[in-house]
Length: 398
Image (cartoon, rainbow, N blue to C red):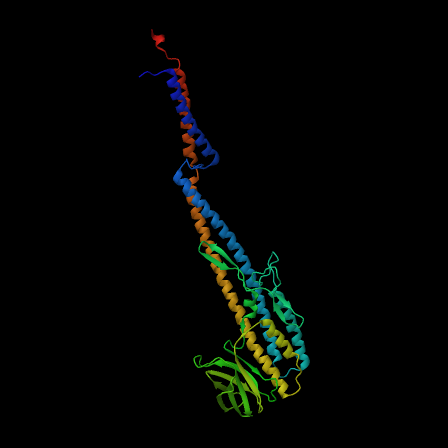
């Protein structure tokens, strides 16, 4: 086969071009510090690198979400802790006011502090985060959730929305609680039924605690305990059907349909006490009723009994409100723990992904520099060999 100078030159240039491409690839790797800079460098590694980059980006978003969730939930938990403190102080003041030795003026002083605590609770219910968004407005974060109306009642103007945020691919947590859930859905009474005394009562009967003796025997409904005489009573349902009857002595319990109601003092004939199924009440209504009760003058035994009945049942409602907020704080604590656990898990997974990414993409500089030296040497040798072969000719040996 005839080998011409042009053929030798073309072969050499092709070899040189290939060597230069390899040299350029090595130089790029050293310059970037990455073994894989293009899919052609390593197609399998390039595909895996793309997957890992996407996974790390998601983990970064989950990390940001976790920070947001932690901040919002921690702020809400702090606010609710202050709510519990205020409610417990109001309960202490109510218990003081329920003392029979206090006069109207002393109760007015206690009512003044309760009013201040009421305003403090309202401010807490209207708390905002660092961006000025209301914590307890549901989805309506730009709307003040609790507003005092012209008649002194408190109206909720938020909604029942609850925002969720993803903390991993398969899990999300709520980062807020709507104001109606936090401050309005509080069971009245003992959570099963509530008690009240008819304002027209003339005796000194005072309701005590109501307890559920047999939950299976309780039939939810409205019942009236009517004293047909000072020592005997009848229990009738909403249809005026007789449910139970009996004699009563002060301090004893009236029992029917699986519940027991302690009644102290001396009811008069015609006095009525009402038993109703527990309903949802809001804490501001409870406090407004408390302030109204404290504002009533006590000048005889019947008005004193009305005061103690009102304050006694308010204490029951305050206990339910405190328990309700404590339970809500417990759920927030559970969510915070879930966020913390997921953040730690995501951090560990991110470290693992970063390590794998480094193994796939990062350059071993020692190997690369050694390869670069070999490639430079090869190119130099090839150039010298070509330059020497260019001068070869048969005429020089004739």
